[in-house]
Image 1 (cartoon, rainbow, N blue to C red):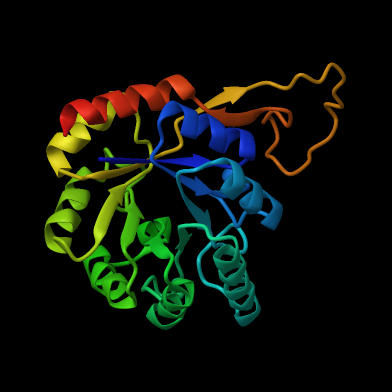
Image 2 (image 1 turned 45 degrees about the vertical axis):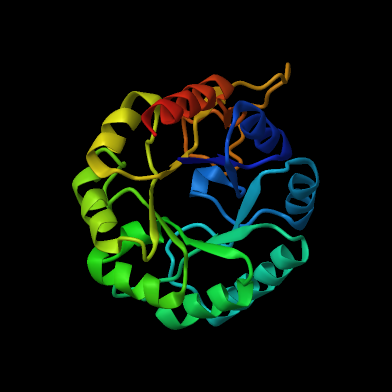
Length: 247
């Protein structure tokens, strides 16, 4: 059983590691679903956190249909990740019709080697998940992160099980999206998945004593600009304990 935890800072990565995470997915801008972390963040997490480290290769938020210039940025970031000796990348590219961009995804997979590749939740935006499964296997990626093309893994559990059954030993299907302690046992018993992805996040307030509440720095109206999310150490520990009991 493998538990992968999202981290968007050095502090978050250290917390996840200390709580028992087996692997870190490192990204920034969680409010956009995660984008490529800075070189400095990658370097320091690699230096201080001794577990498997996979970095997000995603040049922006929004959809997964990328221009040539955006793809060039992705290529450059893969090379930087290799230079820092991380363990893997997390990426995914689609065409406008909701199919997998096999050619460019395969290019990134091959460029990243010997790093491993996870095809991220761009998978949940495909028109046909079973055709996408075969396409991603053809790219050489080792893993697919997915909620089963639903709002969360519980809602997508039927598709997740079907994907796991069809994939067999050819590629790992890793459930993610709303994976928490309260649903992990049920998801495991239904799908039989061996790897799990979680944000295990909790909301914390700011220690700032002065706040300019007139500003909007990019979040929606009514959302606290000073609030942020951090990994919940107790939740990670609970999930690791439960996975140990289930395996």
